[in-house]
Image (cartoon, rainbow, N blue to C red; front, side, top):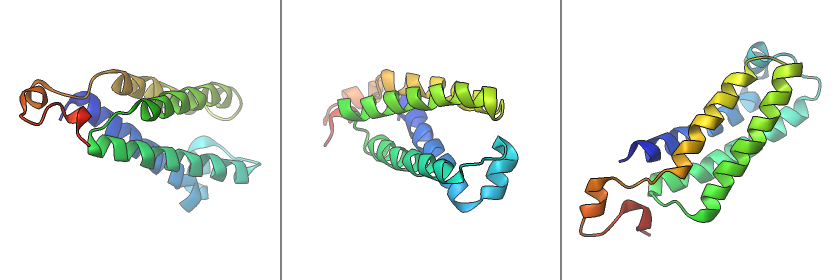
Amino acid sequence: MSLARLTAGAHAAYLTVSGVWPLVDRTSFERVTGRKQEFWLVRTVGGLAAAIGLSLGLAALRGTKQPETVALALSSGLAFGVADVRASRTESRIYLADLALQALFTAAWLRPWSTRADLSSPRGPVATRP
């Protein structure tokens, strides 16, 4: 399995776990990110992050990288990145770490997932398997 595909899987896991976190433990979430006045909004964004993570995770597990999945990964990373810049100014500088991770994960969705071993396989590249 290629490093890019593993990184894409890590991105999916990160989004899923970080999305579920405020849903299951508000206290620890706010301890790290700062107190929130509109926690319903945090839960909404968390739920969306988890949903995106699950979708991207399925693609990484299957080894398929369809254009709509790449668009979801890149556009959600951009949206979270913009929110991270804003939140780092008003909430906590910890959001800059998320911004850095979103930038790192972007490369995984832009690079090919297949490896030389995958390309020489009788079934063809992993990324084209159904």
